[in-house]
Length: 133
Ligand code: CMP
Image (cartoon, rainbow, N blue to C red):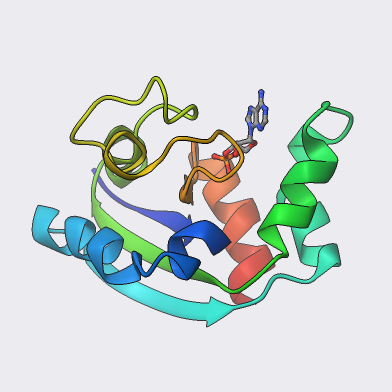
């Protein structure tokens, strides 16, 4: 099924000059980029974005990291994009992410884990509203 998903290249990915390397993986795979934006998340946007994580021990760290510099958000379209893109980014903890995945190839830290991708249609709708409207 053709569907859309949202990716956010986090401040570490932008700072490290990995925007092109990351975006090109999705283009090479065949996904269409239907929207693309570079911006700095406000605290309010970050709190809405990470609302499902309120109360977790890493929540404050998450908010201060995601607002620490510019991010690049994109909406990708293609077959089963939500699950395929999640596979391409790899496990949340880069130490456990398989080689060949983005986190497996470029990351070593769980907070600075380079990229976020929506994990469901509901979260795609919720997250893309926060970022693109
Ligand atoms: P992300 O896919 O953006 O969704 C929530 C983020 O919380 C996740 O990536 C990680 O960066 C972060 N995260 C998840 N679990 C932990 C944890 N145990 N400790 C620190 N950060 C975490």
